[in-house]
Image (cartoon, rainbow, N blue to C red; front, side, top):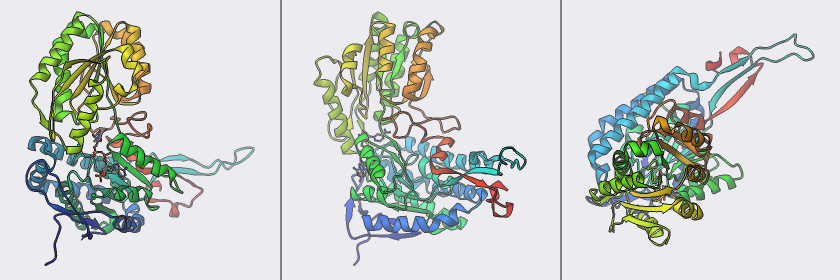
Length: 504
Ligand code: NAP
């Protein structure tokens, strides 16, 4: 009898099994064997994507919008199965996955309406000036065109919204680019069901079969083969600094380098200004603890560092944070590796003399419990490793002695996804001094809130200077993210009959 693995690869519209398999490691429920990816399978998916590109790029915006809407419907039709296997594989609660499914469907529909509207094409026209002296001007028309097949690395922490049919895939398909997804080995079954939804939408809307492919993981060579395949024109990635940097370097070293849009790591500093601290120390501490531990701290926008003035109000903030964290039990992490990485990150804090433990816990296996530490501003700035992301519910309070300390802290930051100001009107002068610095450090600056929620919207920026992302001109959330997969083309003096329909 032939063995059929639980999950296979989707190539040119067909489900393909390779020789090797890997076993999933679900947080609960049975483990299953999945077909492991190989460089040869990656090459087949890339060839299918390349073959699909001309026809897909030539589809009308209305047709692609209908395709995106159909994917949303097909995902919704598989809601129960997705939540069932998703909770087992990731350990995330059903309510979280249901919310994330709503977000995923919302993103697909948002991109459908975004391309129907057409403003993203950024069409420009400089009419001919035949009588201009000393030289006539030609007729110039410009618009954005799709770049070609895009590789997407699904993220472990958003198995739906940043994975198989997540934001990167939605943006690339909306632009007219075929997609090859490298499935995350932490949720291969979830990825397979979502891929099946996309396959059904391809069939319903008559899109070319190679427009979407999924290669399951289980072998590090899969990612390397994907980013170095000459048919791939850009990469969307969310994950670790080490993994992202390795893949970024491979992209840059290709004979024809391509852009790597990686979202890697951020500690999302929060500046608690003196007026806000005096007005509401306990509420701010409780709010921070909630944001820090949401989803076991496994959010790229997790606010890991709080800059807080020294003194009694600051002490009250720290105590309120610690009290709220003491009430949070150990939570299941997405993978064993992520739980181990969390403990390794915590060890870094435990081993530093300048770091004072406030609330320190031990966790075992695939769980993590909250930890809180405190340090002075000068000591923090002297040890750059304390400013690196610890993925999980770990917080560091940096105590500042003066406004100059806070400004120095902002200046010492690496690139961030977000920076937060907790402030009252009385804090405006200090906030005005901080803002020009924070703008150069973060993709999103927010006031009087917590950065964990990322709105999928036109004005959202989810990106920032390195290492928050590898490409500070881009965002991986919101409609602006489509720009990553477009390239401007200028059409000079082309007869109307030859111009793309969108420019006529
Ligand atoms: P990861 O280890 O970077 O893996 C992400 C994806 O890239 C996976 O598909 C992985 O393949 C692939 N990959 C990683 N390194 C590679 C390499 N050198 N060559 C080829 N492929 C490679 O991230 P993760 O597993 O999702 O989580 C691990 C850590 O990433 C966390 O502890 C956290 O620090 C960080 N993380 C950050 C964010 C964020 O939003 N900034 C989100 C999630 C995770 P395999 O599946 O085959 O390993």
